Image 1 (cartoon, rainbow, N blue to C red):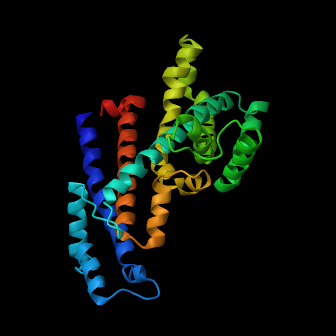
Image 2 (image 1 turned 90 degrees about the horizontal axis):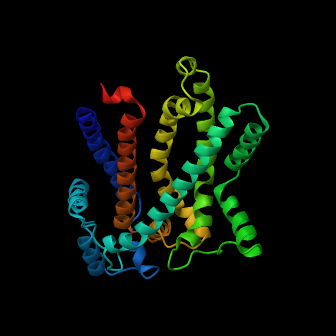
Image 3 (image 1 turned 45 degrees about the vertical axis):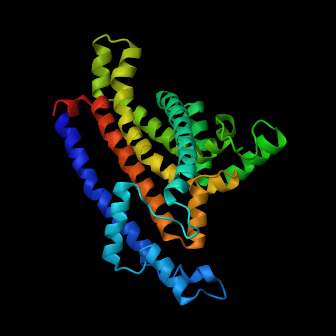
Length: 308
């Protein structure tokens, strides 16, 4: 088990450096001068341009900029925005909000998706199975922003069940509808994936053998069918946490949430490379940590890994 964890940790190292290098290269090697755009039509003086570039290390060679960027990552010094605000303080305000929203959406899609998928898989070909398949396909087919505006209009403006925008306190209640919208498409995929996996394992030989030995149906479901069926679902959910955080920009825009999505959009429009790179680097770390946790979860779901 310790060797298994060690191998997984070692595999994350080249992934981290490779991903951060690609992000840094794509942002900093883009055509155009972000400093020149700060002056608008009048432009900045040569002295002001040189000062700003020196403050943000934009006057240095690319390879040196990347090394300084890595140093900032390991020392948690992500530099400053063009307005003089620390990037780390900007992320400290936005990141927890999006993280709460993404975890909330992940819980909703995991609980509802697995529960509905198990029921549909156990009753394959029935009315319930056909209904959830049609509804899940409908959710997958509709863009997220359409789902968001429709739910905001019906459940917020018309029925008044939820606030149409998230309050400054960012309560769980105000995040409920945005979390449902954010996780709706993933919920449909989790449902279909669980349903397919359950329906395949129900007819497997080891399940028939367990029932032939006289094991109760509940024990067969928990120890054999459900445990083996959740392996592909856990893989999807592990990678989906990063996807939810990265894809929250649309949901945050609809419900006026001051999170990573809005921060990233403002940084892109203003041409602030330090903020863009720093935010995306944190998202990469979320991807890596989430997938590492999924790898550790494999050892719980699949006993063969524990006894390698």
